[in-house]
Length: 463
Image (cartoon, one colour):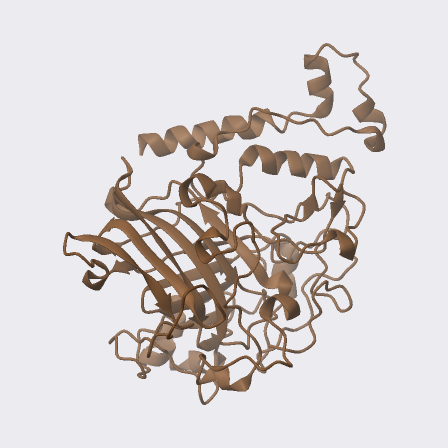
């Protein structure tokens, strides 16, 4: 607890150090009382502050160095990124924030946290699946074909688009360092999760791809007994739940099925072939509670949008589960509600609204209930997991054959250095993640991809 408090205090000091008003910086440097920053935002020159907090000290819900984040916000407010980036300035295989500090322009979408924040732990992004430097997508992307609902290991037809071609804006990174769990034993301490979650556009789609790298430690305080997990595939999110905003996603969804709240069944949107792949019994093919494979999109009223222009906690949650990993993604500001047909409705923010920020810009993830490291992963009987290989997209059924590298059907996995057991992860209490909509105040949001005609990767109806 003392270490967490110290880190929190240091983060606060660092944020203060990079949010000093430009005029105050000028006075501190001995410049004249009349700063050029005060008279002309266009005359503003970005100040590079080199005293960013060490990445190794970052904790809680921070997915980017707070010094870097605050500098981007300040530069955006001073007009540095007013110019829209052109399509030729956008690389669909490379992570970026809402702004490009090199090209001095802004995009109409972003990809969440900074995956390089944990390079010292996991190595270069993309290296684990054979494409070092690739920071958006991976070889096992999803693609639109109806048979994936019942047979997710089918071949991709030549005439359909990959996920990154049709729905590029949905790739998000959620990155955390120095995490803790109850008791500090057997914890997920650091992770880098890339998930495809396209806010409310993707609600009717059951399977979505992901890539995850986790460090787990027997002693999270001392970082002792640690090892790495790398895995990926297609996550199953099964049923769609669209309850009132007052409901708790997990409690209400399961209450609808266990008989305690049958009135909530009206808010469940089902299709005949949707079922949990891995129910609590552990027997594939069943569909019994408790349910932990579902997409929950709360119905947000216009009054709630106006009263909470930057979003509300847990306005949307996706709970996904495959045999060796499960997680839930929590979103503060999905861009729209979801209708009974599973499609997104009119966006909460109009393209010209200068105050509304329901723009899918704040989210986090929790690895629930535990991350299992099975005895079968201990290949030499010493109690330490040391397994590498390939799985199919959903990690169930027959493994793929003749895999030598990551492909659309061969998903690599690695367990190295940790003790066999179960590892926990808890969200940092009383903290919220960074909001990546850093559009200057008083202007319509730069995040416009979900409005018709504004996509870089066109939303052409393909799931």
